[in-house]
Length: 314
Image (cartoon, rainbow, N blue to C red):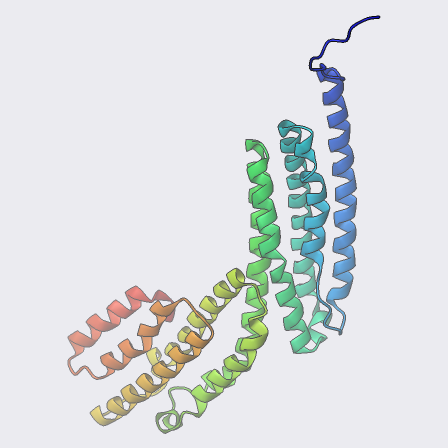
């Protein structure tokens, strides 16, 4: 009878055979995930133009599809885990470039503008909300993958940045179309004695705040900061262009008082909207101070400082 010796078994497969099997697996996963990602994108895109406000599961579906492979691969070996992460990140980057192109086509389609405004806004917010989880997924895959994964991570981030910027621009343009009649009433004789114009601005922005707050935090903060900046630009522009002439010290004093009241109201509004661009709060009070200066050299100096610190207001 032969005695068996205790000891570790050697590898069952040669390194070459194992590498060949891994190559086949990565190739299969690449093809499968590409087809699956295209399918979920197509299914989600078909709902973008629907009148019903349906929640989007696109980001969750993409994460689940890719994580199914990237979570199991490291159990075979660290190196295979890195290869799978690199493969899935490449697939994600390709998917996100397609996603970006379809979002652009969606917003360029004239028929889409026939959707009810609240549905169009809701759909646009849903597209923005795909960004943070997919960006986080790309970052995780890049950390696990080899150094050559970096270009795919950058391509993923670039596609998501473009989607976010486009959707923000669409939302801001929609809001300011509604706000423009109120801005047109600023810096006129009636404005000196009535808060009607600013009440309209604050009311319109406040009414949209609940819808905008459905956006995830990071893109929401960027959107509100741009809304804050744009609102201040639109407010200040007619003043600097001389829409209302102040021919007496009394008129300048009344105008400075109205500016301070409006500034306080705008500040309260953007605090409520959780804007972090608090540096913009000083623009209108600064202009109120300039209005009450008497000598031309001092006015020129202060206007120069204002234009230097806030170049957008020119």
